Length: 174
Image 1 (cartoon, rainbow, N blue to C red):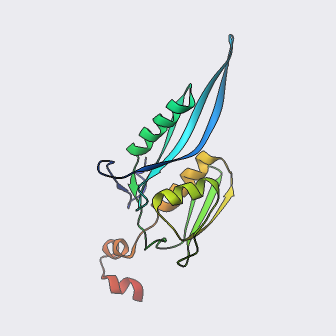
Image 2 (spheres, rainbow, N blue to C red; image 1 turned 180 degrees about the vertical axis):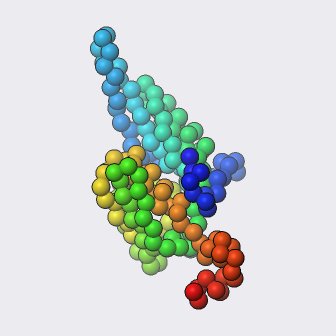
Image 3 (spheres, rainbow, N blue to C red; image 1 turned 60 degrees about the horizontal axis):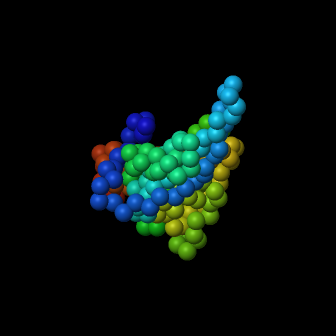
């Protein structure tokens, strides 16, 4: 799922204190000749609030099992996000489908200035000071994936220095 990101570090769920957050539950309907068959799909974000986060989708005939399936799916898709203190290392844009998300690091004490699905993902990661803007589609599935796109593109100074084959001091002088 995260193969297109070079710096994406996959994480195993063992030993982590993961908290799950429900982003949304949708009722879906399948029309058959016998009438309508109702089901539910749930999107969930899990994170340890210290840089590890994952998202998952679950579908079922009832809400509780859809959420349980989504949590299990999210635990299979955990990634580590580089943080700088309680904020982000740099500004980043992400997109998925019709959703566009812009996340910007903020000064200490700012809080999480984000709405809906973006806020849920950023809180699960453990970011405390960030500004964000969500544009385009407000579909929670696409907004969550666009936020993940932005987060997975983040790189800290050590990673940049290693990739360029230079010292950490040279990164800031260039």
